[in-house]
Image (cartoon, rainbow, N blue to C red; front, side, top):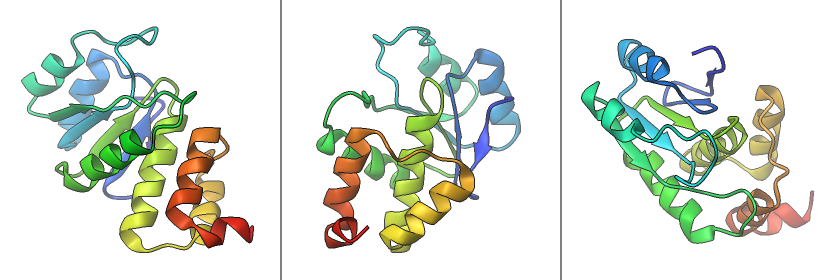
Length: 148
């Protein structure tokens, strides 16, 4: 897995995985895979769930399209990240959605401020600029978002 980015002990993020990436993830001790891609997206691995589960990995597909407001979907993804066996490999098309969502989950779980989230995102090179993420961050961090 050449494009994997470890955010912390619980979450690593990547772009679209291949069958070899799934095998490597299982070998490296990952317990779960969370796919944020819609089955309609170009380049999706059509039998990813079957391949992941055959390797002993828990698998969840919780699509989040970057072009829409998906508060309910993001809430569901945060729940999944909280409840999936760790460590989790979170992926999307290029890794940006996966990195942002996993980092937001970490921030929520650890009670970070918006400033702490932003600093960690900058340190790791995780973009938080997508409109749907900004809306979710506003909802999650409330007044802190207005002061920045």
